[in-house]
Amino acid sequence: MQRLALFDLDNTLVDRSEAFRRWAVEFCADHELPDDAREWLIDTDQDGSVSRDWFFGEVTEHFGLTAPAGETWRQYRRRMPELVSCPQEVLEALTLLREDGWTVAIVTNGQADNQLGKIRRTGLDRCVDAWAVSGELGIRKPAREIFEAAARGCGRDLRGGGWAIGDSPLLDVEGGRAAGLATLWISSGKDWPTTLAPPDRAVTDVVAAVRLLRGTDVSGQPDGSAQARHVVPDPPPAAVAPCVPRTPGSRPGNDARPDARSPRTAP
Image: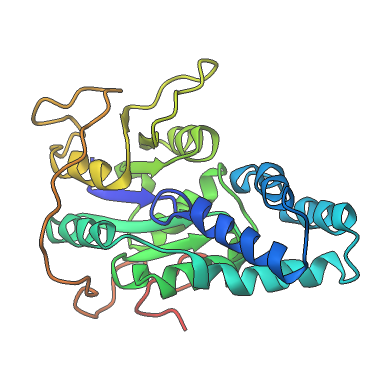
């Protein structure tokens, strides 16, 4: 199995839930909404799993806003990249993974302005080899094609295998499995849905996921005590240099198409 790691973005590499909570606080203050409005927004958002068209339509109707839903959505997409964060230990973990010879890409659903803003403002653009954003592709996870686009952006082919890492049982694990990838679920302390086949591995957070990947051999088998579907303990923090891009240069098959961009060729 090739050393290819395809990471989800929201609630995997970045804390989307906390960013949304902060947005909800600001939104309620700006519109002088009642005390229970924030919880209504968080509950209705369903951790980003519902359509944004539907969500902002519901927000407009529920609170009787005068601005069109599309305008509220546009303001949301402009603000969210400013609120989202990526912990330094995650950036450092990705640096270590690439130094070990892994190729790393991001596969994410969402509008291009919102998702690319998150990738660039957090510094993740300097810590990965490519990304595939559904808003640019017109294809969303769990479709195999978006995983293929991310691999192609790295000059890789899914026929060589690799790993899909993310927090969504359906989008990341089921989607990755259907694309022929080994799967690594970021549980964040949640239980796996009993109606789905389990992932190949499960860990509590993305730093633990990187630790597990660095401890696997080329066949994808663990070289130590980590076992399939066991939660891996959080590793101690590592002190490494800040993330920096790899030495510039072209990669075979990396044509810098919008659906498979490398940080070195993205505008």
